[in-house]
Image (cartoon, rainbow, N blue to C red; front, side):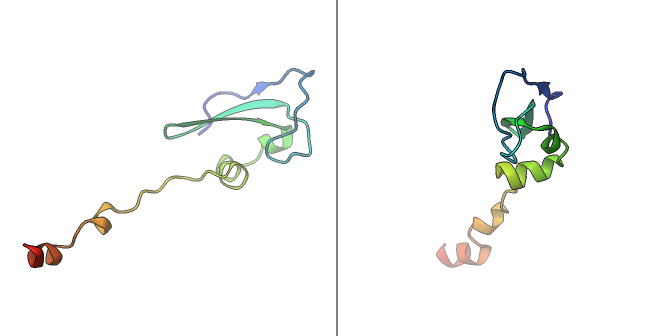
Amino acid sequence: MIVETPKLLPENVSMPCYACGNESATHLCKYKMGELSIQVCLCKACMQMDTAQLLKNTIGIQEVSFPQVDRYLPSKKAVAVAG
């Protein structure tokens, strides 16, 4: 899920951590889920958080699960009655 090694932010950048909002962000982290790329600035503590937990609980993204397509197709019985 993590795309590349987190990059250290310059010391003169004053930005709160995206995850906790309490500490100053120290690193730029890039994640990829399927086709979606995500960049967030995190503090040292939040960088240690499990990636799945970070994406689900903090950023609001979780693994995408697609519904079964056959649930939305007409049943064989309905096709026989209609035809």
